[in-house]
Structure formats: C-alpha cells, structure tokens
Length: 141
Image (tube, rainbow, N blue to C red):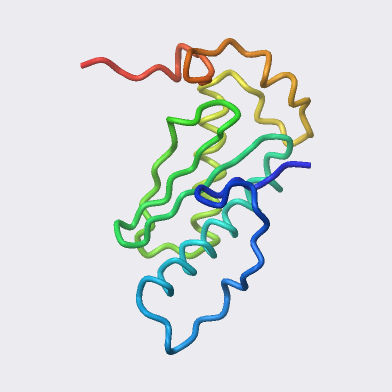
C-alpha cells in the first residue's frame, strides 16, 4: 500500500485532527494545521490516482506555494504550484497533471494500475539517489 510522505513527520502516524481550529491558537498553530490539511488532502488524492508510488507534499501558506515530490524518483526535485485562490479540488487536479509530468520526465508509466515498487528501484540513480533521466536533468544556463 502506498504511503503519504509528509516532511518533518518522519514516518510517524498523524494523530491530531487538523480540521479543528481553536480561537485561542496563535497564527503559527493555525497556519501549521492548514498546511497539514492541504498536504493531507493532496497526498491522499495522489495516492488514489497514482497508486504504488510515493508522494510527498510540502505546503507553505505564507509564500503561497505547494511542492509536489515523488521521493522514489527524486528527493531534491519537485513540482511547484502556486496556491493562489484555488480550491482543494482545483489543487488536486493541478497536482495530478504535475505528477503525470514528473512520472513522464523519469520515464515511469502513468497508468493508474498498481505498479511493482522494484521497477522504480531498478532505475539508474545518481549519488543523491535521484533517478537519472535525460528529461529530468536541470537546464544549464
């Protein structure tokens, strides 16, 4: 079964209810809960849409950016999406397209069927454990 990777959680199970906001919370606590809620909703949608792959979602509400990662392919490169005035549904659809592009750049199938994780592990990797793919290489200026 695929897992949702949330940076900073280190594999621990999330036990807090992120949907509850208390009036006595300060701004940082409310912001952290909102970021966790968005990351959880996007991550669950990604796991449902592309099973058998790892997905990481980082959200920074202050800067208005969501970063979608596929750690099984690259831990350093992600797709940046501006939050703007989008709904969760709009962000989920944008992330599905972004995830498809990430998979295509690394020559991994986009089919929704469950894939064998050993397929991802067998891909050629660099010293940082990122998959080596011509389309995923950074552009040199």
